[in-house]
Image (cartoon, rainbow, N blue to C red; front, side, top):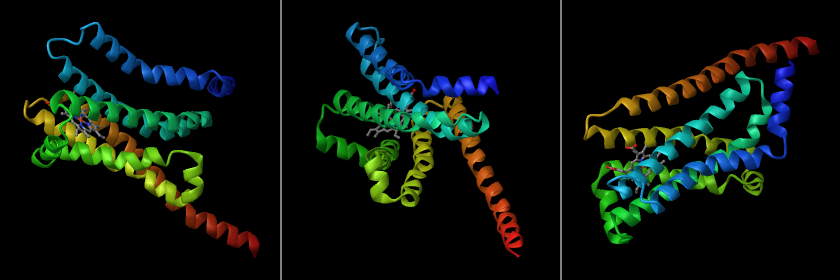
Length: 220
Ligand code: HEM
């Protein structure tokens, strides 16, 4: 009980959010430093595109893990960080897209469009980016109010589809090299997190008729 309380207290501390913000920014600072100090290896452009792709997928997994962790560890304060973590997933995908547009395509919009249409793995990634955009745009309180909680929740369920698209994008990219080890690790993490959600949903559905019956009995 004491451990629970102190965990809650630490997460509610005014310094907790700035600290998490800095932690989320560290990979970007590290990459920026690597680029400036010429420490990104023989192909810095490829290293940047790949690392920002990896961090996008990692942040999507982290966001998906917030609710299961919050429930399993009985730590409601974890919910405070969900929005920031989601926005960091968007931040890294934007840097990923910009790195690709700059280093691979020289910011030639016609070439980028041609490449998106021609290469299915790029198309799938781009679809993931497009779907993440409304989630990032509606992550503010005013948007939640304007949409209404139910519609907002429904829209934000898209994150599972986005995770699937990110995974497919990664799988497709690695299939050229027959190297699926990391893809399977991400697939397993996403499957466990989605499985937990499905289990919760089924549990709630099974409980609901019992609750309705109990409330009807208590009224009689
Ligand atoms: C939700 C959206 C996206 C996710 C989760 C994602 C994730 C990833 C991941 C994990 C990688 C592999 C990194 C590695 O090998 O370690 C990657 C590579 C790549 N992605 Fe994405 N990506 C997304 C969107 C995009 C978009 C919008 C574009 C461009 C239009 C794009 C273009 C690329 C390219 C060019 C590579 C590197 C391919 C290579 O080096 O052969 N991605 N991405």
